[in-house]
Length: 174
Image (cartoon, rainbow, N blue to C red; front, side, top):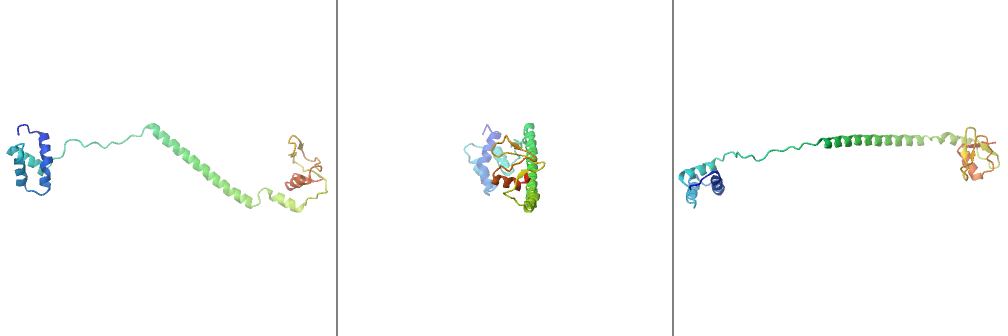
């Protein structure tokens, strides 16, 4: 074969290499090469068999391992998201603490605890006259522009309203 080059060598190795891999002896592989229609010379057959028996490391690069660089804007976005996540976790923790404190507060009677005691000690008398308790004030339930202030008589209001106002500590007997 006149035009024997690296590509011709690779092609021959590809075709006859499986014979060697299948366990054929050197002479059997060389006989198969000699009977090839391409008419390899004895030197070429030796070179092909040498390449089959002891493959050289491929000089061509198989590729480089690429590493991706993270753009700066992505790093900033990730940092911002992490800060937001931490902030949200702080809010979740604060809500949990508040809920726990609120439950404890309500179990202990809350702000209404003293009012409950006042209700028990001062029963509501439907026949009595009532006035706004000292330091208290409230708006009329029908006319929000009207305000009742400390010491003002409210006996004219309906009994149900007086009962509620008394229970909340906004009025006292006159």
